[in-house]
Length: 482
Ligand code: HEM
Image 1 (cartoon, rainbow, N blue to C red):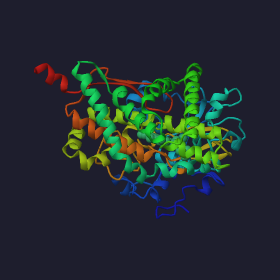
Image 2 (cartoon, rainbow, N blue to C red; image 1 turned 90 degrees about the vertical axis):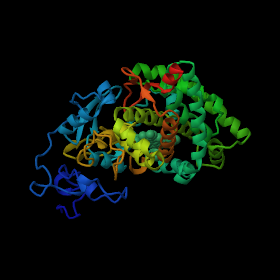
Image 3 (cartoon, rainbow, N blue to C red; image 1 turned 180 degrees about the horizontal axis):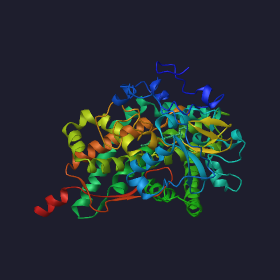
Image 4 (cartoon, helix red, strand yellow; image 1 turned 135 degrees about the vertical axis):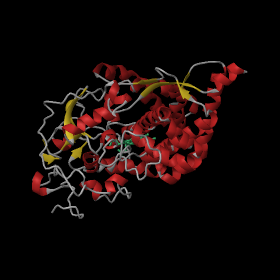
């Protein structure tokens, strides 16, 4: 066991005890990686420096969620420029305890290897508390939860197998790469329509918030169409979900209850309407699955539509807006992309997925049994949150991770997670972002972010949410000069 010739176990029994994760094999999963079928990056392929031992032989300092370290993942710094804070966290260990609002002391991952290991081990890290001797779901106690919120726990992201698989199977095909590629022309038309509106707005001298006018509207319109919801209702969603994205503490959870209730009542009406008169879109397909028998209960149907609506746009909004901010801050990279948008956009968006890391943390999981994991002793029932954002900033896998390099290849980022809960909408998100950026810079080649204060982030847990992105389209100058 051990050695660098390919037999290093991702889980080593010798150090961690049965089922334990070896604290010294931080690179092993990447070295042995067979999926995704891309090799690790250039620096990584070079392998360890022959002059040095392959792994540091110092056992990690023992921590506990009862004594969390003082890293604030909701701080402005963690949203604006998270790389330094992630490096400081990594220096403390591959898994470390931090404190989160609402949840308290939990474990989080700081490296690519540890993050991927959490994502892929659905036996050790579970979402349903009952599978770890707890009564909550995804780190949240359910005993006092209002019924409205309990309904939402019937979604695939809150379920372990076998329920997760049953729910996901119902929508997997609809979100396949082929189905999403077929949507591209329609997404382009929607983007052009929004840019027409922005152009009119700019012509009147109105200040433009790109989050509201574009980055949020595009994914909402697309997901509404996919689900078969009337596009004229999208302003309502924006309004309700804007309130959901400010959930950062207990008080705001209660404040969000009203909008969640309204949204669920609205979706219930839409489901009933689709039942009475079938219409194009996923809601009608899911209603048929519900009516077919025991594949989907009514609460599950409601939770499914809710999760597709909510998961499907806030995340993509953050990637599009974060992408614009990243290009603004890296003019050389922007110039490289603009030289050949058609050919370079796909690669560029992969790097933006990594660099922006729109979803900083996955849903919290429970540890299902006592285990040694990357140098720490985890106890059954403790909470673990995998951080794709720290994985994507790990210098062991990405050369100069804090540098935006749009031509980076391969790019084994974990922005869309891995394992059974890997993002259902990843193809859709990629295509939406490629189209959004391509059309935006095609229409406004001189687009710039207002300085200073053009960017406003939310302090939301686990999300790199941008609330405002004030931009100049570049047409203002043309108008003033005329
Ligand atoms: C930039 C955009 C997006 C990012 C960064 C993103 C990221 C993620 C991540 C990290 C997860 C795993 C969460 C966990 O394990 O706790 C996830 C799951 C999920 N995502 Fe996305 N997502 C994006 C867009 C979308 C879109 C457009 C949809 C489509 C409707 C979507 C639907 C879902 C669903 C349903 C799950 C749960 C899958 C399951 O439990 O099997 N996401 N996403």
